[in-house]
Image 1 (tube, rainbow, N blue to C red):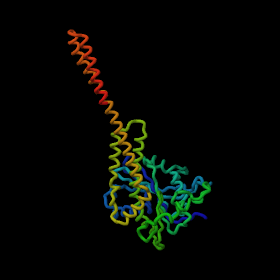
Image 2: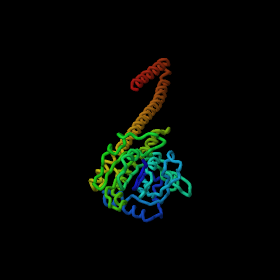
Image 3: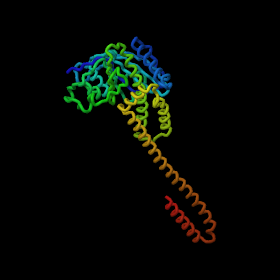
Image 4: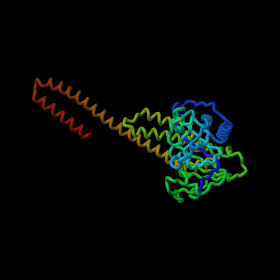
Length: 379
């Protein structure tokens, strides 16, 4: 069968704004104005904390994205226009890049396959460039290694497509010459986590599928925003934990000794993201429940547990280092004390030697032996 899709595709990427400066853009169009206005309003309506006020949302531009899988088609130059948005938290530098294919009918499984490979490419001046390289060069954004896809369909998706959408792999792959196992990836293996009867919602580790069941509802973007604002909050959490884990792993694997000052900066940096971890960040229970369900699918807790594990490893490494340094300091202090002691005894014995030279030498040797034996037992 041929892959058929009708709807919207949203791709989310986690980045770190290395400069922590506002990124300005004069680009705008009717779609970008509508999207940003709806998203900002939804945050103001549904988020309890002030994090929405610290997030700068910007429309960067529209680009033609290559969407066919390089391994599947000889015609790899087919492109589809998509909108590029940035949400930057001004306090932490955490940045979410969102790519929106609105009202698209492309074979999205091939774009999802590119997502798995981190092989998203755009066309600029008839040349292809990776999205990652473009954002690094133009905005000094550092990719943190995590992405998600949200599929919003206007009608039911064929059951045969679900495995590839959940696994982010090309449908009916000629390169694989095999199919994904039904008991692992089919729709009926995933619970419908939708909170309202207006849609069905299924989620996997990196993909969320939303089926809008309202046939006559025309404002599809507004319908999606009610769900997308939750995704953005969760992506900021993922962004925070990925940045911390990346830096901790770097500390653990580098050849040089762990720098306590660098570690202090790292812990302070992560503590500033605490607003995103507020367990009551959403005003409405339905939004909080959906966020909780998605976090289970996204394995957010496992990533946070990895952060704690890295933290324990680093702390253990620091404790071992401090113990070794303390032992070395003790040896140095003992050596200094021993030298001073020898000179003091030598002075005493030198004065005494005029009376009894052999007795002084014997006494000196006896004192040194007793002292060394006592020190050896203590160590």
